[in-house]
Image 1 (tube, one colour):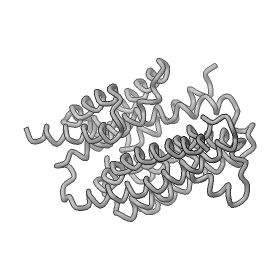
Image 2 (cartoon, helix red, strand yellow; image 1 turned 60 degrees about the horizontal axis):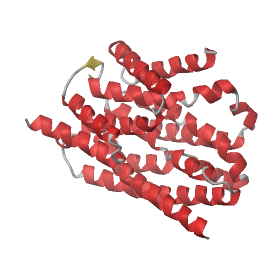
Image 3 (cartoon, chains in turn blue, green; image 1 turned 135 degrees about the vertical axis):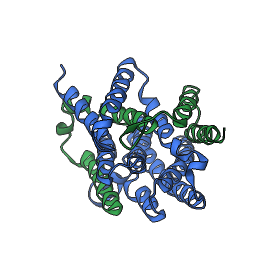
Image 4 (tube, chains in turn purple, yellow; image 1 turned 90 degrees about the vertical axis):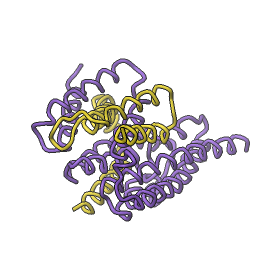
Length: 218
Length: 99
């Protein structure tokens, strides 16, 4: 029981932090030109933060919606690997699996795999997923409504917000030397090809290069 | 068009999540997939930081967003919460424009 309560407390803490982060998503998405309904639809249906930020970031920077959608899907590929790790823990089938899949994201995976007992893993997964889903969507709505009331988001510096958001998402993944080197190389390549291809496409070039690198290196 | 992209990307992201839970484990446990997929968010996020700070459309530009990014880097190094990092960057850009 004490373990249940500790999990619930952690899940709420994560959900509240994510709700705050969703406020910035709602604001950035609205400033990028998406409607209130489009912004909220992303948080309900896509429900994976980095992909949502990428889609609206590419659109806001003048890229095509398809370059944005492709980047969002590529960023979502890591969730497939989370699903592999979670499938043996969750043991869900049928309709429950369809519901569980929606919650397969960074936070729920981290909470579930951190438990030694499978029952607690499942509890952590569902508690984190549900709490986060509710606060993520409330935060999105709040951020979108607040930004909707502002006529020129540039006055609030909201055009400088997406890079900061991406940096904050990137930082926890750079705790070793190799990822840091790869990140810097990717940034340099993206800037180098940028003048020659449509907006948003540098991201796809970089994704292709890293895939070749990952597959062919020994 | 925005709606189409929103819906297609949402379905694709859900499909990836469901595939992870549903596909035979050994398919996605291939070492090439296991070492490549974690690199994708790193390169995409790094490229997004770089391109969205230093460009407008297809043009490379250096403006107040670079100052905002510098502040965001400091906030991240200090392990500030997400919203603080974003708000600090936005506030920096807004202030620099007022100067």
